[in-house]
Image (cartoon, one colour):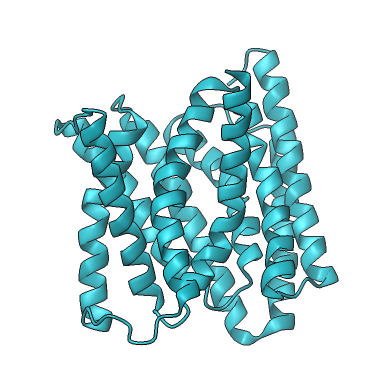
Length: 297
């Protein structure tokens, strides 16, 4: 069991590390809307097949439908914003900015779920995270004007992602991962197709590159289907604090993957901003562990 769990953990880290670069590659010659719509359609097909093989029902009661809608907000709103932003910022930055999602989630959980997720230690971590974000904005100015727009887009995507997570927890429908994600995609995929029709008239890209095609297939089959399955397997069998450490590993690995494979620039300012955000996450998780030992939520 430990070996399987360890392999699953490594698998999730590797998938999360490679996903931002694959998102960027998938849009080359294809357009970001088509790339996102194709990925989600492939992912939905795979998940429906898994539901069929596992004889897993997709509940249609009121709380379940509300949960699917909340998940669709993330799968459509957050992911579409991410795909759009990936045109303007280095792929590694996407993972770094998404590292701020625990902070956003904690603030929303404190406001809407009445969780005791604030305190001096966490407020200090949040402040460091904000400082790191400001440094990243300064780093974007060193690239080009559109990088600022891309950075804002990723920040919006991170906010939507965190809001969706809090909303799902607030509904608390008691659904498993497979029906939850499948139900969300059943709502999100038609929205992607409508967006593709509205913006690109559902015309297949004539000059899609092999790299983009393979990236779309990887994201649909591996990142969407296998990635979710492995993540929830790890989440159900490992301490949440250990799972949360993925947020410390993947941003740095994504940053250097983009540098080594995609020749993306890493400036001293970028490193400083990333270091501040990672330090903020480390402090945040340390405080979480201390609160867990003391019986605090």
